[in-house]
Image 1 (cartoon, rainbow, N blue to C red):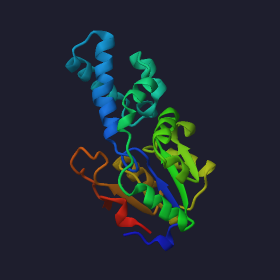
Image 2 (image 1 turned 120 degrees about the vertical axis):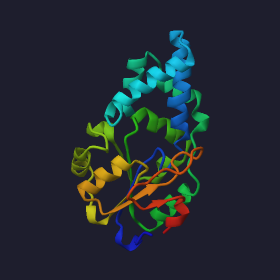
Image 3 (image 1 turned 90 degrees about the vertical axis):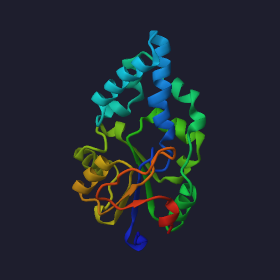
Image 4 (image 1 turned 60 degrees about the vertical axis):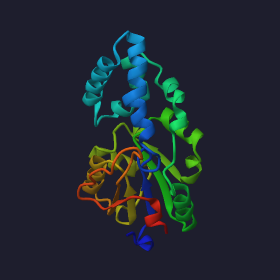
Length: 216
């Protein structure tokens, strides 16, 4: 599926791509509503309805991914709540073997994520992911999420890479379309970001079910 001899830079998303999205889905759709309902004296169903509407308004913006934004908006200590369920943070199967194999070929491996710095820190503490990257590019440091075309321009300024020899693997279709518009040559989607949910529609992109499929 991948001509590894033509790839010099591997760009990897984190949540849903390398890590099981079940943690994040459970956190935002179950745990936060539960704690919000307790704090506000609301029924759980009412809390979920209110939060889903708020999430929808922030979707596609940097705020959606910002731990500090949601702490302010909801009056909750989001980093603390994240730690309450951090036992659910899990690396997808074969990911670490894949990263080791890619590193052994001498490729440049970059984590490119919309996740907030505090979320990255927590997930690196719970997994061995952090030691596998040459560089971590956080959208919050660049001021735009990956869904926006300007993100890639800004990334190019701080971490230059050749679009013609880069491979991006990401579970987000808007991100993949943004990267394609920027000119990144090789793009791969992920069929099952959340191990507890069915396979997702990957649109017009090639996709993997396991990193074992593209092991160098």
